[in-house]
Length: 299
Length: 133
Image 1 (cartoon, each protein chain N blue to C red):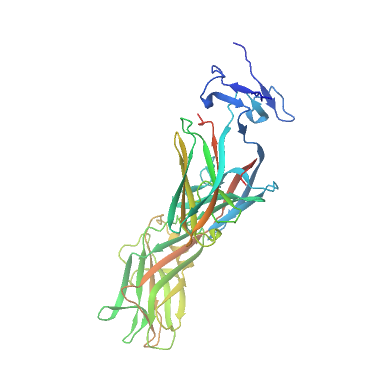
Image 2 (cartoon, rainbow over the protein chains, first blue to last red):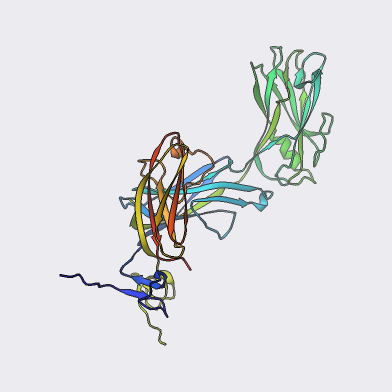
């Protein structure tokens, strides 16, 4: 018995059912079509310093289904849904026009579809490397970060360029880390005070510039070998960005002032010494994923 | 010329609806037809690329989509490429990714493995008899 070529074919208006161009066909029983199983949305919240969030969508199909996924973020790119996978960037006008970048991915297995967004930098955290350092020399070209190497205390000043904080922006953390330093010979702690430089947009830095009212007295214990040390400067940063003429993109400066260290107690620097300012801003971002799951099987 | 055609609505919706989403089928709208589908496994040496070429010969650049199990035996099939600039813990021991492109005759899948060892990667694809125009 010969099988007959039964079926249904519907073509676009003005096209022939004998057309060899498959795009002319609206529907044909020769071709299967994707059959929708569900459409779901789910959200996750990025808090400051978060880098990764994901949402799982349960499908209960018992096999790996065909799916499509999209994502959008609150407060950015209103009205847009980006296809997943993707490389995502966006700007936050309220935060100094800085951009964020991230990578979105999605996979399905026999029980869930997982959508994720990985940011390349922690959310709402900015890091700025210093671009200018003023320090007092001990002997030759050996610079002292802070302390008393003998013959009186030494201090330093640092400038951080183009700080992307708006005037009076809400921040929750600020920390300055001095990297690649050594302890002096003395066993006692090195005592120092951290000030901000009380200027709107710092030019060349030195240790005699006007200081913020906010300051912190700190001590650093002796450490063997090369080390980094960090110091909180939240109040100083808040005071600087509250200045009348502070604007996003201005330079910000700090002074680490010697504060009565014993002779021989100091923190020594060299050419490889650097400084980094880290600030954490307030606010959250909600990422919303949308997943269309089909009954068609991948595996 | 009359307003001829065929349409089937989903449960609870009227055939007079002007909302496309109310229709299971409507000859007013083109449907995306699966022209070709398939799957396979490709062995990708560490720090290497491997290419899988699938002929379709449609004569136009079709809609296509592919999935890849980036981590062997994980059962997790990523849609499209795995996007990253860094090694992600979800990929266990390293980065494996898939890129793809379509021509008028072929779907090409390009796999990359930087996991530290050879990997057998499973993939699955759909090619549609439509170009989205």
